[in-house]
Image (cartoon, rainbow, N blue to C red; front, side, top):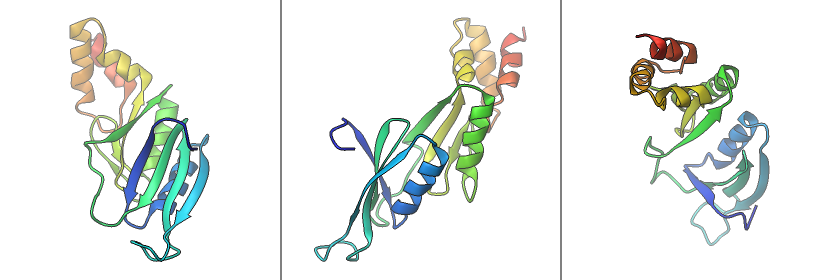
Length: 160
């Protein structure tokens, strides 16, 4: 996994290995890389997992057990562009199970607190419509939703 350009480092408080395994279970094309452990040099407990490399959807990540100093916020999220509602439903359900949370406009937090935008491609098309009236109506409908409902956004966009 080295030498591939950018790698996103995700900071965890002891859950790095569980998080990597969770993401690899959600994203079926993923693969796990190296696992590094703390040594007697610290700062963590010798032998404890320090880092886990993994890749999902062609993106390289490293999960770091860095401690409680930093947590995730909505200021950074990952957008999952879905081909259709079925794919969006899969990711929405997978990422919110076991302690994840729904939020507005297709956003969710997984059980580790990382934010994701689960977005059917047609939803992006609707809110980006060249007709500003259609885009505004689709956007207004979307703003009332947690999980995106493309059919409802389309109905709103088509309403005159």
